[in-house]
Amino acid sequence: MILLFRQPPLPPKREKRVGIYCRVSTNSTDQLKSLTAQIKKRTLLNFLPKLTLRVCKVA
Image 1 (tube, rainbow, N blue to C red):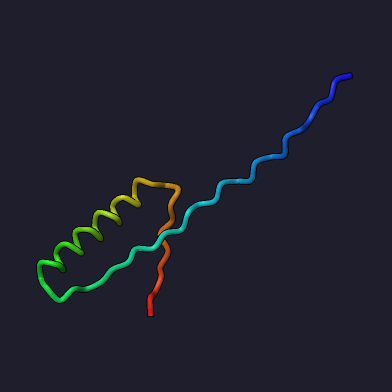
Image 2: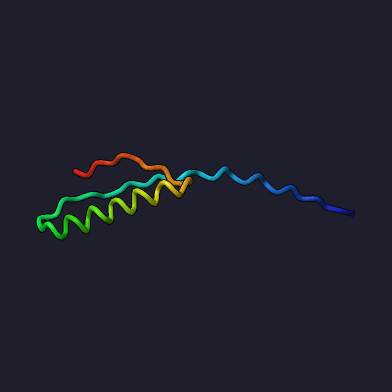
């Protein structure tokens, strides 16, 4: 007797939703570092098609 088992279909992969936290520092050197980090992260999102940028607000 031969038993055949059917594997259930895999669920579709969901996109990951990401947010970028931005802040303004009081020291101008810190502001420049913060802005540089923000630009790097935003640029990285352009090359990761499975990620979707979402607008998020922090109260």
